[in-house]
Length: 174
Image 1 (cartoon, rainbow, N blue to C red):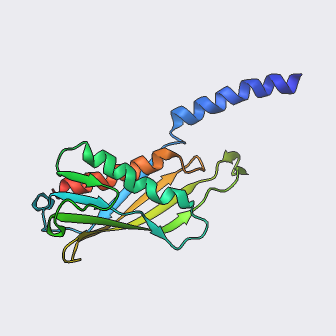
Image 2 (spheres, rainbow, N blue to C red):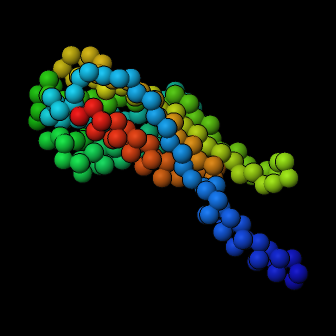
């Protein structure tokens, strides 16, 4: 009985600590090569499904970042067409392709007790990107997006956060 009472008090306190301490925040950073090419010269942007050679990466997740990026960029009304599938109604010379590869993935580990406190598993993901001119295959820009969640699982928010970084960069070079 006493254990149940203690447990019922600790769970809400732990939840409160996570919410207000930032433990569950998703951190995203990016780096892209500077480019002189302005994307406003293009009418369409096509996001391709991410690739990876990492065996334990969740395969269904490979389409989430491109889909989130396309949906977010489409709301900005900068391109006549934004898609995460093949664009055929615009000439290749007016289309940019966004390619990506999951280069690193560290899945979450179990909850452990370290240094006098409880440590939740952490997950991180690194995606390398390339923006290409569809007609020529020439590289417009390359970059890297890193996402990190301290809660130990790949929440949908990590994809949204990474997609936001991609769209921010695209809008900077528009």
